[in-house]
Image (cartoon, rainbow over all chains, first blue to last red):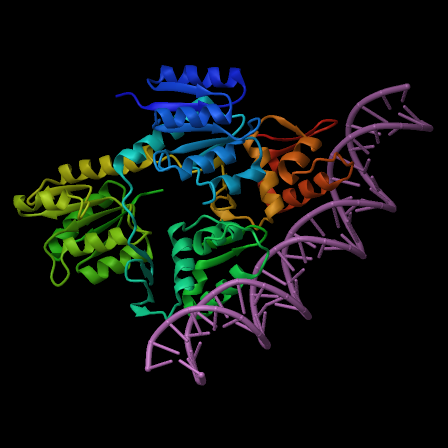
Length: 226
Length: 226
DNA sequence: TATTTTGGTTACAATTTGGTGACGGTCTGG
DNA sequence: CCAGACCGTCACCAAATTGTAACCAAAATA
């Protein structure tokens, strides 16, 4: 079975180039040049992977990505976003959009093929969910709702635990406040408050020495370091 | 860099034999004779591979293997299990334990060396880095928001990091100031200020020797050279 | 060489950002 | 119903960051 890939870009030459290369590599390719077409094709025959340009007329890549994630049939299809602006990367990889990977234009075809291969392989293997996270002396047991330092549990509130878990699961990667608000608090609106900061402070206080894992990345967000 | 290998076996002669042979072959070797010691050593300095005997007092090889797999820092280290019982093989290689290879005692040293070589090679080849740009000693990890020189991270501000990222992603191509203002700052207006220049100066200062990658193209803009 | 253009540098004031303490509201168990 | 836990906001502050202007040096141009 050849994997099916949907390529979405408004520039016909770009689509053609990618299409050609993917077919060369043995994939079945379908294409779309605008959002409506993309959604229609993605739904009618769910592809194994989607390559999605951010810059599109009318409905942009962000919108499409979000919409695909909402639909049960397409919510798990890996998406690679193509973007020109580095400023957008944080948003692209964030939980709001949840793209699986990205490439900044211009990119080499070889690079794109590698990423595609990687994502498709991941789907096969089937990511086992991390129930228990360990980072040296710090361990986080998600099903038990228990975080501990040298086997001594912390007394965390529900929100604090969730915040810690989300950060730890994305260990190493910076999470913006917006992302955290969405994932931990499930907020839609991007209200500007110090809520995240305050909870980080409380969390750090309770974690004591373990709080060394919690980095502030000024101007960006927070990061859990191993 | 010599690969580091941790050898765990409760029989001192066996350990010594393996250690000798591994050192002969150019590996750096550390050893442990019980579970607690093994875990401690594995965590304090994560090895590139672990040779683990199943038969150990107190905590057996199965336990150790499982524990290592739970810890984020050691979960991907290849493990070769040594076992006397052919009946255990299924379990050793199964998902529960997830050892990478096994040998049944008694085994030839040559055999062990071959397996080690194979596993280390696999680690090298596969796993293309997540989203990592590398130019010699300079590496840029976008999701982590971390740029470093010989693994030593720079202390860059958010803007400086974005600027470096944009230039590096377009390596070789000149970027005009307008272009940079758009892609890094998300400015629409094309004001004529020295903003970009100032940031380039700060960036160069912080990058030190790595700033050789940052070229000025008079009359046009800036360019990242490999 | 004189002039102009361009980029580097310095300094600084304005702004942004994150940490912190405090407060009132809400919820929960008793 | 009440005490206490928990949570979201807010105001304030120190520190980091940033944009700009003024000035200077080098390169290009005439």
